[in-house]
Length: 317
Length: 317
Image (cartoon, rainbow over all chains, first blue to last red; front, side, top):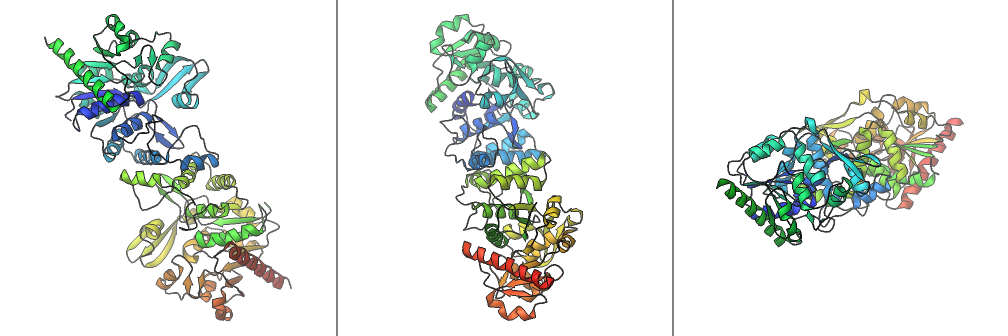
């Protein structure tokens, strides 16, 4: 592999920046290490929400309205499933199902999630290398004031409403860094590692919980730059700010920087948060981080990469 | 169970008569014992073509054009599956998939095919009792001049073109009669057993190959009436006549009666075949058997039941 950028990402928010990076680099030069802590078995199918959101986003076939699933989707499956008394809380589009069925079938025949994902990404015409964080099952579970909940029960069925007291990544102790992730991080041409603006607690921490991941990031010897998922104390989408509040953490860039303290060398923060720049424990780059258009995504991606280059230059001085 | 009629049936042709019978009897009085020799695993899903064709036919949601699958179907799954490099030869509609996914999931959790089918049929609003011929896997395979072929490879992928030399029902030796089939055949109010006009070699023989099935039919103590699937030496749909020719059997009602000799007490034949009536080894009833309309189906069903009643009366004399 001749990877220049490794991006760690979850679903929607992270995938937006990943698309920006994907536009900047030729095929095979960007690798995305994706959260699989949200993965679960549903109706006997293995569902990988973040991997799929990223793939659909990079392939240009994601549903712009929902933030998950495919554009131009049909819903006959769900309609019939519910009429048969099947569960309706997790929406599976008809086209989306092809990915789940094909993946589940190939996993059952013994292929690794990494191998299956590579095939799916290739079939979807994606040039970027899409790498599940591990091939072993890791399941994010939240401890809430209503008890322990599986991630999708919390996030989809309960719409992230229960109050979180703690988060665990079940199985992470026996998860292994894949050879593909190892190789990507050891690429000789690697310039930077980017922590995309996904939820640090729910989407990025599972990735960082894989044994060996943190040290592999450090050993890569390139700047690790995080993009703050908050703007003016609020999350753009999803429950980041809500969860921070529940965990007793102030929703500001400094808290994000502190959370990533042992991993990130720099933090990209929004112009609205410029006043926080001096109060962060790492160097910051202040720039608009709201990604509405594809141009926004590319600009933020370029800014993030440039920031990493400046950190590298500073270190080399 | 208070079953009055047990019908043995395969897919399309048999399901037409089953619908006619279904219209004649109140809910819970007709039981259909269905061929599962065509069942197979595809993409990790358990597909039961004849069970589904029968269920969709009885539920009034079958595709009248194809003769399989659901009416008003969408095809997003197949479109995406093929774009991912998945197999396109077996068409799975989006709504149809809900049945396969739900069934496969429940079979994996340990439910029997009989139990899952009962739930699906109930959810589809079917009053007739739909019974798989057995809960154990039996796989119809054809020996052809091109070698041994799995049934769907032969029937769908190869469009029934290879020349058949023999037929086997793999696994039938260890298949067991289900308690549900046993109970249906032992119902005190049972009036008749109907062999629907499905392919005798490919659809009915697998049912008859289940150990104990033939003796259970005999022990039922009611007339067993077959409806001839041929009209003027030709099959209405499907390869019955072609297969008979390949096996060196003349395609006429007498051959069908001979084939069912140890099972059937009478044969319903088409008006076009009236001249064969005297040459059959069992009593015959001559009547139009082509089922174009729902009225045709009901009329043939009524005629078949009346024929069985006349055989019963004759025996009781």
